[in-house]
Every structure is written in structure tokens, then in C-alpha cells.
Image (cartoon, rainbow, N blue to C red; front, side, top):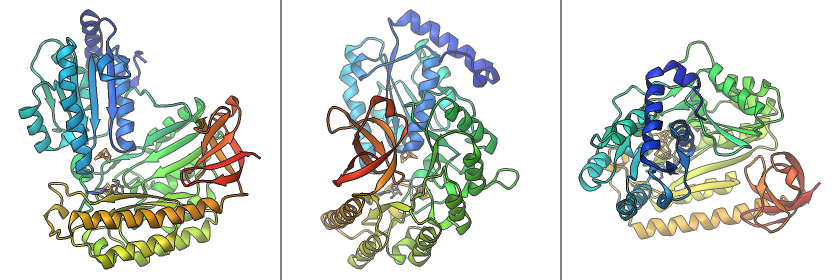
Length: 468
Ligand code: SAH
Ligand code: SF4
Ligand code: F3S
């Protein structure tokens, strides 16, 4: 990992700093090790892989706990208040560890660090944090570490940049079967509840050639599933020269040689078109699955959320997808208790999920994010009532999911075996195109391959079967 790749060739000053950090680390530590914890979505996981790549180039090994680390790095998420509370709690817990472990450094990065109010709090109340940097400052890490290790005061690098895309950063990917591949960064949609556009900046797309080049490398090194990432992949290509869009990207990806499959997240309903649906129907390497977050089943609430679609439009997309892709499956995100939501709105959400019958729902209780529009709105519904609605939603979905899983019994599905199962010796685990877990008896050699599994039994969390 410490070889000088294209990124370092193009940025000789960063390579020089990387080499200097490496030297300092060897002087100051026995076996310099870093513990990294990533919170939040796949976008953060993907950034975490770049941060690991940079740190490995500087000579860090990876530790399995803060107690064994010389550098602890938290890559944070700001999407809901409880995400932030957890990070602050975990940073607090590092204080005694740091006081016991000579020379230990603490670094914080990710979406939380894009908020002034958070950074102020760290400056004031967490004096033992050494390095803080934002989502556009990954490439500054060697310089910040160099300064801090050389005895300079603690380092803050907060987003003064335009967020232009930095290509070719060294990468340490998570695993050898599935890979995340960001196709765009940021978000322009400003849904009224959401902090992402504030912490991730404006939407910008990676060049098609870069995405294809990286995909080719992944397939050549044996990856079997690539997940294309963006806050709204359906608007991929906006702002790029030429006329590429997401359909065009999928077609090009589908044309790559090799036995692999393609997922994508997230698809915003307002930009989902029949053309895209037809493309997915045609591309055999693209899984027939949509993560198409609806957020609410009430038009009144959707308007307040600034989502730019109605339930009628949303349902027409579901119908179109079912018409063109007979085996299509859906998953979605739902927010319960948006400001001003009343029982009737919530019931509209329940009837929507009964109508669509999602394989999987990711459900959240609304959490006000300072600086967003919705945080200013009147929110009279008490927390207990929201919790009761939330539980009701979980119960309805659990029943729907149970029925969907039950209906799979007797069917044969192609799964990508991704590791050992939880059901004991000899069991493997895999995922269906809908991303449902399947456990089956198999052999070690099947891990990393596509296997046809006949389903015998279904529970809510997983399907069980045998090799067909
Ligand atoms: N770009 C994606 C979503 C990214 S955030 C999209 O548009 O669908 C993932 C999910 O977190 C959102 O879909 C939403 O359901 C939830 N979420 C975002 N902000 C939230 C908030 N303030 N409170 C509760 N849930 C929120
Ligand atoms: Fe947030 Fe909306 Fe952007 Fe998704 S599309 S990241 S919910 S603002
Ligand atoms: Fe969280 Fe940032 Fe993702 S706020 S959900 S990690 S884009």
C-alpha cells in the first residue's frame, strides 16, 4: 500500500509529507497503529477506505481497539441527533485511554466536522482531540499529522475548499467480494429535514471514464458486486461535459466483461424515469432492485419535506418498474413524526407501505437538525406519540416482510455467497438481488461465487435453503 501511486505522482508534496510522517512514526512509536471507526452511510464507509489508504501509505498498521492504537480516528455522521450524541460519548471515553497511553493522538473527521457548532464544542470542551478535518480535506491528513507529530498545536482543517473531486487517492477496501464505488458526491436537493447538503456540499459527478476504470480494476481483482453510490444517483452526470446520465453509466457498466453484479443507491423518486427503468430491465448485470425512499405516504408532508413528488407519481413509478421488470423488488426509507405530521398522515404512510409491500424498510423517527428548514417548523406531537406510531409502523412492516419471506419458500434464488453463516458449522451466508440474507449449507470454495439456492424455510431476518 505504501507504493507511490498516481495520486502521489501528481501530488509530490503530499508524497514528501507522507514520507516524513513515516519517518517520524518510526522514531516515535514501536509499531505505529491506527484504530478507525466509521459511522453513518456507505459514503462515509467509502471515505474511510481512502483515509485508511492514506494512513497505510504513512506506515500505520491497523489496530482492533483504541487501547492498542497510537492514533484513533472517528469518521462521523450527522444525520440524526443520536448519531452525534454517540460520537461525543465515544470521544469522551477516549480521554482516560489517551492519558494512559503516551503519544496517542485522536482525530475526528466526517460529516459532523462540517458543522461550525460541533467544531466550536470540540475546541472548547475536548482539548485532548488533536486533529479535526472535514469531508473535503482527506488529502490534508498527511500535512496535519506531520505538523502534530512535529509538536505543533492541534490541527483544524475545516472546509475552505470547493469540494472538487480528488481522484486516485490510495484505497484500502473493506473486503474482497463486494465494493462500494462512489459515482458522485454531495447533494443539491435540500429535503427540509436533511443535513447532508450542508455537510457534503453541492452535487458533483465523477467522470464516466474514472468510474469505468475503477470498475474494471475491481472486476479484474475478483470483486463480484459493485454498489454505485450517490445521494441521488438518478441525477448522475449533471454538470459533466457531454450527455452522460445514470442510464448511460449503467449501460457502460453492464458492458464490462466478467461475472459480476451491480447495485446502486440511492434513487430519488423525483428523478427516476421510465428510461432508467427500461435500462435496468435490459442490463442483466444490474440487480432488479430499487432502494427508492418514499419518506412519507402523505402528499401534504412530502410537500413540507421538499421532496418534489406526489404519492400518485411515486406509485406510478412502482407500477412502471413492475411492468418492465417482473421480478423487481423495492426497499425504502421512512421518517415518522416529521413536524406537523398528524395521525391521518401517518395512516397514509401505513397504507402506502401496505400497497407497495417493500422487502425492507429503513425507518427513522424525525430528528431536528439545526440549520435545516424543518428544524424551524412547529412540532407539537409529543415524543411518546411518535414512538407509538414508529412501533406500529415496525409491526405492520414486520408482518408484510414475514409474508414476502414466506412466499419465497420453494423458489430457487441466485445468491452471492459472501461468508460464513450464523447457523453453525457448514453454513454459508449470501444475499439475494433484493439484498435479503440467505443461509445455506455449502463449501468454503463457494464463498465469493454465485450459487443457486432453493429456499426451504423463512424467518424474518433470513431465508434458509440448500444448494439447488
Ligand atoms: N439521499 C438519500 C438519503 C440519505 S440519508 C435519499 O434521498 O433518499 C438516509 C435516510 O435518513 C433518509 O432517507 C431519511 O429517511 C433519513 N433521515 C435524513 N434526515 C433525517 C432526520 N433529520 N431525521 C430522521 N431521519 C432522517
Ligand atoms: Fe438528504 Fe434529500 Fe439529499 Fe437525500 S436527497 S441526501 S434526503 S437532501
Ligand atoms: Fe451521515 Fe454524512 Fe452519510 S451525515 S448519513 S455519513 S453523508
